[in-house]
Image (cartoon, rainbow, N blue to C red):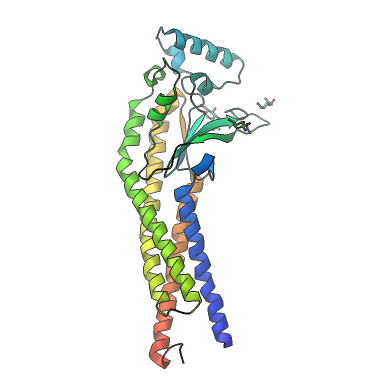
Length: 290
Ligand SMILES: *[C@@H]1O[C@H](CO)[C@@H](O)[C@H](O)[C@H]1NC(C)=O
Ligand SMILES: *[C@@H]1O[C@H](CO)[C@@H](O)[C@H](O)[C@H]1NC(C)=O
Ligand SMILES: *[C@@H]1O[C@H](CO)[C@@H](O)[C@H](O)[C@H]1NC(C)=O
């Protein structure tokens, strides 16, 4: 083998590694949050409900004895500073949305940071992963609330539900685009692997076509995800802060999905360069097979 061939092969590894990284990132984006919060940080957004009802239950005029006893517990808690209203209501401190499921759990040691300790997430349960999943925090919380307590007792605003339902169509489109994006990235990776071993001369053009398709889908998927996360988080904070509900964007997820998109773009450029170079080579001297 000539020295130039060895150099060529070394270079062929660069786009291969980039597309491999893009493939892993896009798979992690899709499957994050499975099995008890594996890669929980890569959530779309988190809803903090640890203080849900703390203010609204006080004002609630309901005469139900369950509500009264919860109210008493909460008031006692407030005096002791440390309080976990969510546990009193039988719900969780936080709920985090992923593409295929949601996870829930408690902040440890407490939901509120103090000088010496920062709360960290302790996941207790994740729902089954399903395609075309829609996360509806109101419905999940209602299903967990202590018998006798209703979302309306907590003044849960319908505007949150409206905000969540408004993005369901976009969520489905996003799911399909992530699926196409990850699948074509995986196919490009396979073509690139074949290309490195030099057994197939159409590798560069195949990789170019597949990585263009992957780039298009991931670009759209990432844009939709970013907009959708912004909208839901804004709706929850706008209407939920008054009743003690806070939402946070999943910055890790946003970083990962855009990193995957960028990697696929760079790989696409490398394959188009490779393709042009191959064509020139073929025209001039009969190609690499002399
Ligand atoms: C959760 O929300 C409460 C306010 O309702 C806030 O005091 C607390 O710091 C938040 N916890 C985390 C971990 O974000
Ligand atoms: C902070 O919280 C931890 C855990 O609840 C507790 O042990 C510690 O005493 C608290 N520190 C202060 C300064 O309140
Ligand atoms: C997390 O939760 C589990 C069960 O709910 C508990 O056994 C474990 O001690 C918790 N971890 C921390 C760090 O609090």
